[in-house]
Image 1: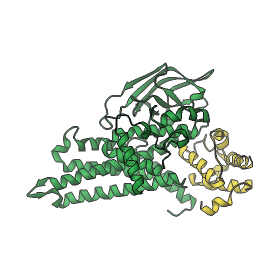
Image 2: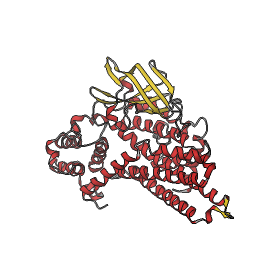
Image 3: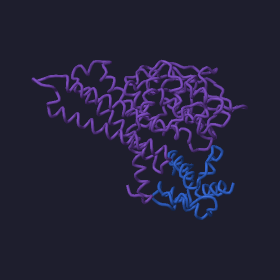
Image 4: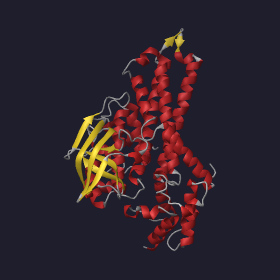
Length: 357
Length: 93
């Protein structure tokens, strides 16, 4: 990553940490639609830098970028022209409404009711765990229909939409999580993203790939911040007549956390390059980066908290928040066990393809 | 797939060759390639959504074509013959 690119990423990260991030939300939106048209590599660095300060805040960029991606890649030309300029400049804030009470990793079990009408669809049911749902102007809602999966933009101001705060979660506590209840909410055809009934679930799968890349970079950012906190503590805290860093077991913790952080960095950057270059194995690279980086965040956050001793147990202390946020990264956009399953699928695919791993 | 492979395929590529490229991709996801001739790929769960969007990207890369939303009908992707026919149509069109 070149100096000017990193400087741009830092400027954008600073804007995203402001109450009104504005055009910094348009990282990946094409310039012809008013976005910044950044590479995935640069978008990733922005994710990483924001998460070093606030994983909760970084989550806004993840979900907003996923919706922009879905509209930009699969939306009709009319829909793109109508919605992307406001999404690109942050005048409209978007969130991703996939999860339900009984549908998490298994998105084929979506239960929200979606009936055809003369001019579109009618939604009734509830979506949960919508990151930044409390701030969103528009939601990308996923449902199953008799013709197959549907993805559609639903404005939170539309009749029949009720947004409520979720119970406070231990991690992502500031990520403005919402539940949304739909009661015979009308969705006109021109708000639908992608073909209904293709059976491919391509809109969700494609957006989740970007989500996983974004979370991977964010995890790396959190891991970096945690390693920094652990190292500062190892230098500043004195016990038994010397700093903690002189004790071998502490040095072991620091070394393992550092190796995990460095590995996350390389895997994240490889995955971003792979998407930018439309690499043959980009899914493998993205899944691997997300799995490794979320684990690195957990490792580094646990080390930072452990070295802080009782101070690390204080609810709401910086290292306590890191531990809680790192747990979120092992759950969202595919939990660790689901990702292991998917990575193994890619390993087998590569083996069957005859390509040497 | 190497850079040389990509340049080998393109407009003018015959159905047999197209079918072979598609088959090579799909074979990554099954132990027994025989199922690819007789089973419905998506309806019967042989390809999950990641493999399906991977297939779309692979077709775009291998044949230098653009798969649009209008192409993403289930009937275009549910069998080896259907995917081959889609590519033949796209290259001709």
